[in-house]
Image 1 (cartoon, helix red, strand yellow):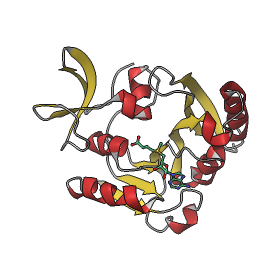
Image 2 (cartoon, rainbow, N blue to C red):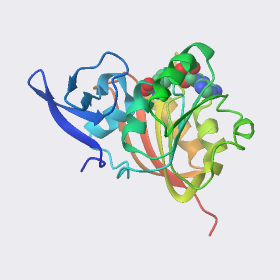
Image 3 (spheres, protein in one colour):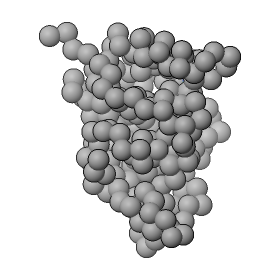
Length: 212
Ligand SMILES: C[S@@+](CC[C@H](N)C(=O)[O-])C[C@H]1O[C@@H](n2cnc3c(N)ncnc32)[C@H](O)[C@@H]1O
C-alpha cells in the first residue's frame, strides 16, 4: 500500500521507519527535515506500517478524537490539511497547544468527544477523515456521534482498545460487539489487529453508511 504524500520511509539507526516533515514533538530522532513517526507510539502509524488501506493520500481535512499530548496528531498535521484535535483532559491539552504553535493547520479543542454539539460550531462538516483513538468505554458510540462531520465517502480510521470496553472479556468478543455497534452507522471496510505494535487493539477502516 502506498504511503500518503508527505509520509516517507527514512533510515533511522539502520532501519527503514515512517517519517513526516515537521518540528520534533516528543524527542523523536530526525533526519534533515524528517522526523521519525514511531508506530510503537501511534496507532495510526501502526496502521500505515501494517499496510491498511486507510485511503489517506495527504492533504485531507481531519477530525482527530483523543489527541492526548499530540504525538500522533502532530504527524497528521504534518501531511494533512486542517486538523481539528479533540482532547478532554486539560493536562495533555496544554502540551497539544504547544505542539500546535508551529502548525497553523492544527486546531486543539479541549472538548468531550461524546458531546459533538459542543464543538460543532468550530469544526467544519464534510471532512475527509475521522481519526479516533479515545480509549474509553463506548468507542462505537463516539464514532457514531461524530459521523455528522464526515462527508458521505469519508473514512473513519479508529483504534479500538478492548480493555477500555471491558477489562475482563476476551478481546475478540469485545471487538465483535464494537463492530456490531459500529455497523449501525458505518460500513466496515477493513480491520486488523495492531498487536505487533499495540496490545489488544483493533484497527478499523470504515465509511459512513448512507441511506440511499
Ligand atoms: C490512547 S490516548 C490517545 C493517544 C493519541 N491518540 C496519540 O496517538 O498520540 C487516549 C486519549 O483519549 C482521551 N479521551 C478519552 N475519552 C475522551 C473523550 N470522551 N473526549 C476526548 N478525549 C477523550 C484521553 O484523555 C487520552 O488522552
